[in-house]
Image (cartoon, rainbow, N blue to C red; front, side, top):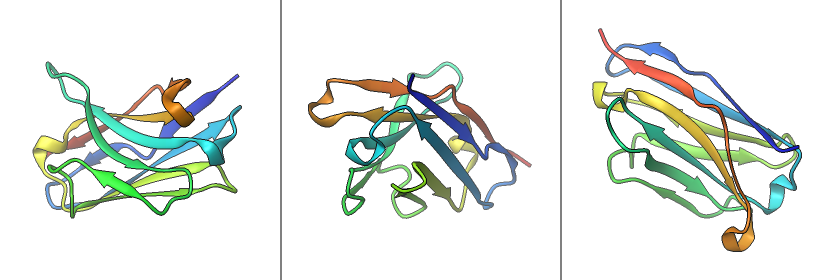
Length: 118
C-alpha cells in the first residue's frame, strides 16, 4: 500500500520560513517524480514544484521560483520543500504527489496546512 505523509506545516509570519517533508512508503521511490501542489480556499489545486527521480532536474511555479527549494533523499524516501520569504498568498494546504515513469501511477498525500499571517 502506497502512503505519502506530509509534515511540517503550520503558522508563520510573512517573511518567515517553513520546511515541509513528505515521507513515502510502499513504492519504488527512486523511480518516481515527486511534486508538491497546493490548494488555497476557493481555488483550484496548483502545481508548486517538481523533482525527477535522479534529483538533478527541478521545476518550479513562477510564483515560488527563487523562494522555494525542492529536494529529495532516495535512501530515506523523503521529499522536502524548503519555503523561504513566505507571503500571505502562500497560504494553502500543501500536497505531496508521486508520479511513476510515463505517468501510469499517481498518488497523493493527505495534505498539510500552511498559514502565512501576522
